[in-house]
Length: 169
Image 1 (cartoon, rainbow, N blue to C red):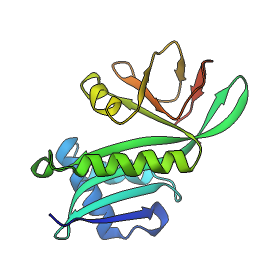
Image 2 (cartoon, helix red, strand yellow; image 1 turned 45 degrees about the vertical axis):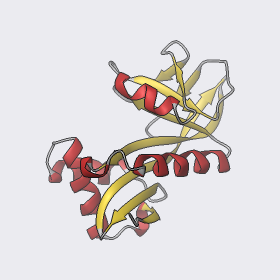
Image 3 (cartoon, rainbow, N blue to C red; image 1 turned 120 degrees about the vertical axis):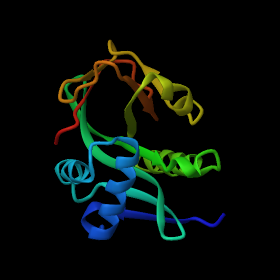
Image 4 (cartoon, one colour; image 1 turned 180 degrees about the horizontal axis):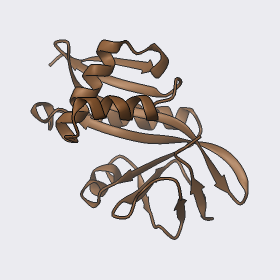
C-alpha cells in the first residue's frame, strides 16, 4: 500500500485538513465533530506539529506533537508532548502506527528533548515496544491536566528527580 505522509505546523493546516483530523479523532473519541473542532482550536498552538498519513486522499493516521514546559529542580526546560496518536480501524495492523511512532521518536530525539505522553493502561505495552518508559505518579507532577486513571510515559529521559510537566503554556 502506498501512503502519503505530511508534517505540517498548525498555522499551515488548511480548513479541509483540520476537518479531516477532527473526523478521524471523532471515530475514536465520539464527542461530535463540533466538539473535536473546539478542542483543536483551544489546544493546538501555531507551531505544534501534525503528522498526517493519507491513503487515497483519506486521512488514516494522525499524530499531534507540541512543545511545552517542564520543571526539574526549579529549572525550566522544554519537552515534547505526544498527543492523539490515531489510526483508522480499517488500517490497523499494517504498520501505520509503527511509521508514526518512528517519526515521533526521531523528532523528539532530534529536538534533544524529553518526550511525554499520558495513556491508558492498555497502551503501555504498545509504547514500551517503541522505547518509551513508564514513570510513576511519584516521579511526575502534572497539575494542569486530569489524569486520574492514566499512566505517564517518557522517552529520551535520564532524569531521576521529580519532574513537573505542564500542558498549558
